[in-house]
Each structure stands twice: as structure tokens, then as C-alpha cells.
Length: 310
Length: 228
Image (tube, rainbow over the protein chains, first blue to last red):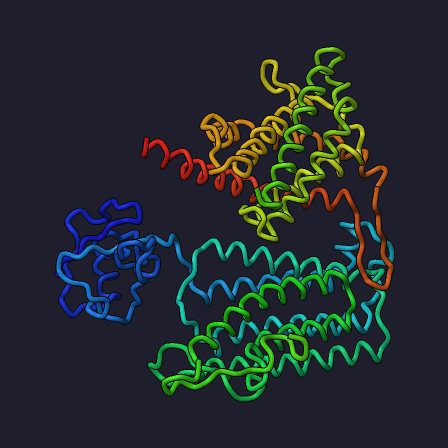
């Protein structure tokens, strides 16, 4: 069948439309367009059906569904949007986590050069405190864990995201990493009491391990080939909708209890605010999808994100 | 008229008055006694009008106005940085000037020209939006709001950066608002460093906001002319 393809302003994207087999999937359509327009590789294409009368936008066509599923027939028009240059999730995660890992370390290992040489602070060459050494190990372990998870645990439901996100996320993580490190490794850094420090790091360690367990659970949510939403369950997910975020936030809380810096707490709050938005959206989506009617399971959780508060 | 609309109309009308007085006092001082006297003539209305803009972030945040919160916060905070951080904390910047081309000189006069005209038009735009029955804004104001920024925004930004540069040495010397380590919260604050980092934010920020305005221009002026 032949489909007319127009942009959102109504201009034709391909002059004579595109011919695809009658049983073609959306992904086949994307490959056909890519063959005609080299620049538009499949992951930067998005198709929607023509908006129904009175509606402002149509339905997004999902890759592994067939065009017939959307009732498309020969001569129909669909709307195309160029999502812009894409970059893989894995690459974004890798670079945004590599940055803070690397930005943190020079302040610890090159104390004399950075604090003494660049900032002109006295006593810059003195040996790091126990708290500073442990903080360096914990911070590094945290991001090494994230990078390893990116390659060996996480399953991404989307392959790519717009390239702007790479720039945005990297600036966020790299800048915070450097600023936290500057204050925590500072020659005039004031440590907390030893008991508080050890308790904080211990809590952080337990939360990091729990976070890993949460990520493994999420990665195994769906059986091979299964698509769509599933209620996460087991371990902390039985009590908290987004246990993965909760453990992440509490991991930083432990780190901050141990290291006590305004910058560290600020980083935690910024992250928590973002995760709060995602968690509220996810909680709402799961509640709507799993309403307990028509044989669907009913979704219930005591907490959305931060037990025992929220 | 609802209470919210009445409030917004009053707010916008007051700020039109505030920025008009900045322009009028500023330019009569410029003609009477020269550029160096402009700041003293406008300090009060400038500081008040610009500081009042903090309310715009509140308006956006509580849904009273439809502007995006983040963009509004970016705009307002950069203005406050220039007023409070540069002009107030570094008085040497108030009389600084630098010729660019012909009669165009960067300094307080170019700053208030760019800011004042932009704000009078912008607040008039909002005023008509809330004060008229069907929110109809005179075409000339719409056109000005979405056109003059093309020149005024770069003029404003270059004036801001020039004034910041002019006041910088004084800020380093006086080091206002300083907070030094060691302290229990492990935080330090060095205002000149903060200011440099802040204005570095203009590198991604300026093209972003300029692009945002250009898009808005295309949306507002483009579709209208098609319909006409």
C-alpha cells in the first residue's frame, strides 16, 4: 500500500508517498523512509496517525506493531516528525557517570596542585583525612557501579534520546561532581564525629547494595519478548513504588551524613526533586493501568518514593 | 473582573509606570548632566521595578501566569544579578562606559534603554491581556514585543556583561558576602567566583532564550499574518 507522509505543518515529506507491503510493520516503514532519506535514520523518526477531527494530535505509531493495527489503508496520510539527532541511552549514561567519577578524583589526588597551586590555599599538601579518603572510595564506587549497571544490568525500553539530553545531563553530573569534590576534599574541611561518619557510610553501603538489587529486579521484569507495563514486585518494591529511586536517594543521604557538605545535600535534593516527578508519574500510570477491574491486577503501594514520608 | 485579574492588571500597570520612570528620569539626566549621572537619577525605580519581577516567578509557579517557570526564573535571576550583584555591590560599574560604533556606547544608559523599552512593552502586553475583556492586545504592541528583542536583547546582554566586567575589580577587592571555610557545613562563598560562573551560564543561556523568543515570534506573528 501507498502512504502519504506529511510534516506537522502539512507539507509532504516524500513527494510521491511511500509504498510498503500490506503487512508491513511500523519499523519497516521507518526503514523505507531511511532508504529514501539518508539523514533520517529510524530512531529519529516519529510517525503519528492524522489527527481525528477535533483532535490536535494523532496516535503515535509504535515500532513493532503493524500498520494494519492502526487501521491504515492505501492512500492514507500519516504525520512525520523529525526528532533530531539521537544518541544511545547507553552512551548518555556512560558519559554522564564517567564525568563525576573523573571530576571528583583530581581534588583528592592532586591536592597540592589544585588547592595550593590554583586556589592559593595554605596547608594544601597535608595528608587527606579518614573521612575524605572514605568519601573518595564511596563516590568512586557509586559511579563505577552505575557504569557497570549501564552495560550489564539495565534494559532500556528506548534505544536513543535527543542529543541535547547528553549535553544537559553531562553538565549536571559533571558540575555537581566537581563542586562536591572541591568542598569535601578542601584542606579546611571539617569532618563530623567518627561514629556519625561510620554510620553514614554504612547506611550508604546498604542502600547501594539494595539499589543494585532493585535494578536487577527491574531488568528481569519482563520475560523474553514481553512488552508493556508490569508491576514491579519483590524486595522493597512490595512497599515502595519506586524503590530504585528511594535507595538511590538514601544512598546519597548516607554519604551526606558521613561527609556533611551543603553541596552534597544540594545535589541530593536536586536529584530527589527530579525523581519525585518521575515517581509520581509512574505511580499514577501504574494505578491507572492496574485498576483491579476485568481481571487486571490491582496496584497498591504504601509509599511512592520516600518511605516513611511519601 | 476576577480578583486574580485585578491583581495582575495592577501589578502590570505598576511596572509599566516603574519602567517608564526609569526611562524618563534616566534620559532627562543623560541630556541634562551626562551619562555619569544616569544611575543616581534612576536607582530607586530601577531597583524596585526589577526586584518586583521576583513575583513573576511566583506567578508562573502558582499558575497565575502561563509563562514557563524555569525560563522566567532564568531571566529574572540574571537581571537581579546585574542590579544587586553588579550595580549595587560594585558602584564603580555605574559610571563605566565604552564606545562601540558611532554614538552607541555601552554602560548604564544602554542598559536601561534595552531593559526599559523591553519591559514597558512586555508589561503593556500583559496588561492588555488581563485588562481587556477578550484579552486582545493592540497589534502594534504584539509586533513590538516579538520584534524589538532582536536588537534589544543583545544590546541588554552586552551592556550587562560590560558592566559586570567594569565592576569586577572592585568586587574582588571588597569581597562582599564572603563565607570562608572551615565551618561545620563545609561550604564557602566567594562572590566574584560565583559571578564568573553565573555569567558563564550566558553561553548556553543566551542562545537558548534568544531561540525561544525567535520561536515565539514565528508562532505569534507568523500565524497571524497567514490568517490576515
